[in-house]
Amino acid sequence: MKVEKVTKIGLVVALAISSVACGVGVGEDTAALGEGEDAIEVDDFADGKADAYSDLSGTWLPPVADGPGFSLLAFLRNKKYHSERSRYCDRPCPQSQQNGTYRLTRRGFKRYVTLSPHAAQPVKLEYKLTSAGLKIKNVNATQWFTFSRNHGAWCGAPADCLEQPFIHPMCAGQSTCNANSCGWSCRLPPR
View 1 (cartoon, rainbow, N blue to C red):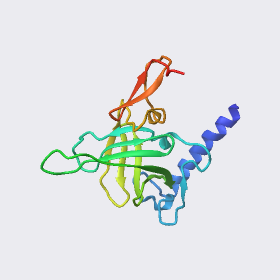
View 2 (spheres, rainbow, N blue to C red):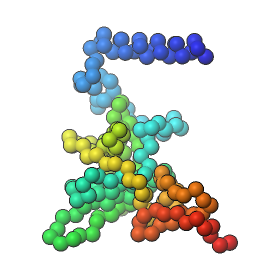
View 3 (tube, rainbow, N blue to C red):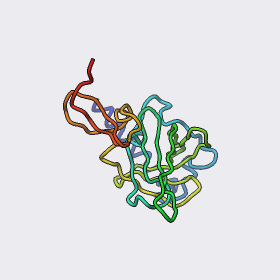
View 4 (cartoon, one colour):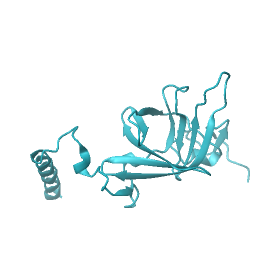
């Protein structure tokens, strides 16, 4: 066991040294590292495992709700999503809502989420999970938008609450969905 750890550490150090020797540095063009057009895009779950960057489940909100783009993103563990977009007009306007499925992929060091809305064209976004939250941008854009995880959870039905991180009281009961917000009832349903 100890020999295995030492071997792994030695491999990491050797890779780091060879990267510097080859002239690949931080902040340089990453085309040589698999970011170019020839890089293969793979599913994040192709190996049957997911890493921390693959768990987007939860409800995400931007710091300014009336800003451009998404005003809410909810990713469920069952690969479904819900989004709401701000609309601009002279009077209060309803949110534009969309439901569909999503797919997580990666190409080199970049990670993508493809939103496939029902009856519309898919939208591919690049994303990063950071200590600040979820950063997301259109693949052809340069501006990143940061979202923070909402302590509450969006829902269209009670089952949606169980498909994302949702903190609830430690009691026997069931999830509830009122006004698109997850809740918990500490009573069991009648038989």
